[in-house]
Amino acid sequence: MRENIPPPGLLAQARLLAAPAVGASVVRGLEEITGHPVEQGFPGTPPEEPFICVGATLPQTLRDGPLVWFHSVNAGTDALLSAGPWPPGVLLTRTVGRMGERIAQYVLAWVLADCQSVPEFAAQHARAEWRRLPSELVSGQTAVIYGTGRIGSAVACLLRACGIRTVGVGRGSRAAPAGFDRVVGAGDDAGPLASARWVVSTLPLTPATAGFFGADRFAGMGGATFINVGRGATVDMRALEAGLHSGAVGGAVLDVLPEEPAAPGDRGWRLPRTVITSHSAGITADADILTDFAACWEALAAGRVPGTAVDVGRGY
Image 1 (cartoon, helix red, strand yellow):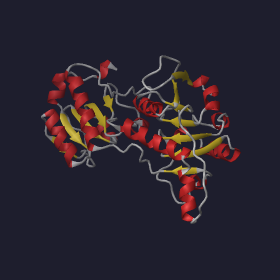
Image 2 (cartoon, one colour; image 1 turned 30 degrees about the vertical axis):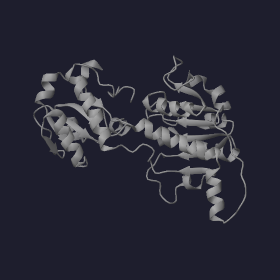
Image 3 (cartoon, one colour; image 1 turned 90 degrees about the vertical axis):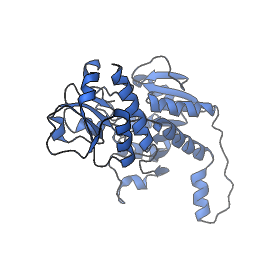
Image 4 (tube, rainbow, N blue to C red; image 1 turned 180 degrees about the vertical axis):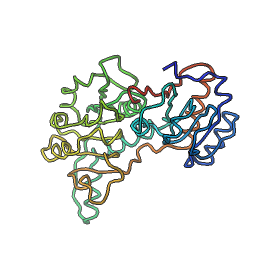
């Protein structure tokens, strides 16, 4: 990845382009960080001089120009990488910011709601029904978290603080990152899945993770609640539906779906014991974009690989 790092001299000369949808506060912040004027909007033809782009998408016309660095305002970069071959030698960085905290709070909220029967009480309220329901303690139970990067680790830290045992599933068995009691490889997840109370996915979408949660994994859950805050296309929705009907999956909370937004007739709305939210677990704030862009700018000025640089071969 180091070969993709533009030299500081090139950064100083490069033009700075921001997508039309980038907000005014972000544009002002980019100018303060770089000392460069920001050209709002992507031109129909690429500049002749080296340039930097900030945005969510990269038009093909700009991919063919002397682009040196693209900073994504989103955490996920699958849409960027699936739109066509990534330009050779171009640095790609992404925005994470405090998304890990936001997603961790979202997961914890649904974990607690699960244990306190919040959906059931809400349904009883709508029927004006008074009926006591037992609660369940989270402490001592197990959450299996797929993805052990910054977001997965933030989820694990918050759940572990509540006394939940946290098992991470990563690309290979290794030392456990912050928040995890242990980490196993994807090929060794059958045991943890069977004993989990919650299964949380923070997986990005890559060729290796498309349809990752299929019939075998859902059938191997022992009644766990499945929470997806990663990417919708990592889930085979028919397999999830079968798992919910069989009881192998006790319930589901889906912040992401393979096709978004979900139309009123989408099968997902009719899944039993399932709640769908509108891809809102980790909405990126303007401050997140500026914080991560500034960190990248500082790293590049020092000749270092930014912490949010994307390995385009792996897809994250």
